[in-house]
Amino acid sequence: MAWTETTRADHDRRRLRYASDATDDEWEMIEPMMPPASKVGRPREVDLREVWNAIQYIAATGCQWVALPKDFPPYSTVQYWFYRFRDEGVLELINDVLAMAARRAAGRAAEPTAGVIDSQSVKTTESGGVCGYDAGKKVKGRKRHIVTDTLGLLLSCVVHGADIQDRDGAKITIEEVLERFPSLKHFFADGGYRGDALAAFVETRDRTIEIVKRPDDAKGFVVIAKRWVVERTFAWLGRCRRLAKDWEKSVASAECWTYVASIRMISRRLARA
Image (cartoon, rainbow, N blue to C red; front, side):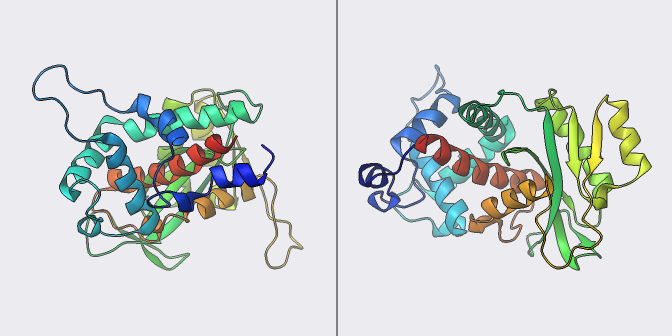
């Protein structure tokens, strides 16, 4: 889409109540995948668009549940729906559907055949839950293990203790992503995933993994083909301040905030297309 003064005005988020709010175009993509209202019992009173806007607000600003502005539904209501989305797999569904739509918009097949895998170590807080120490990066906390397609769109996120080696965490992550995207046939990874055990694990699933090496003569920062895609995705996701640390006791909740950040990014991209 060519950017003109008109299109810039249409997509200027300063016209919204909060910059994190979903526009009409973005909500139109997300709403059909929200849980339908029950046909029995009391009619649903909460506006799920406002619930979604509140979740997006927390993701973008990193604020506490109790610090939600008063013009959103009560934080306990928003919290209830977030946990319901988590337990029913709603966020993964929305992310997957939007990712496939973004691939089609880019002229690609909806189902990816190649993925890029990497992890990011983040500190945890006093909330408790799974925790470990990454001796290589000197971080006490957890790892976000993600797989993206070659466009950098998030396909899967698995959160585990930072003390688990990348080669071991990759097995869990690859198993998870293949359940949702069985079309994946080839994975790209960095040197931390080198080893016969992981290669054999991938081979038993009739897939292949390619280790993309850093040039021996490289000094300082170097953009490395394939690997930079997933690093860029981590940077995109990091625009959501909720991901600056892992604030969650449950790893399932931690994974869901990553999907919220991804949905935010992809829905905005599609709305501008």
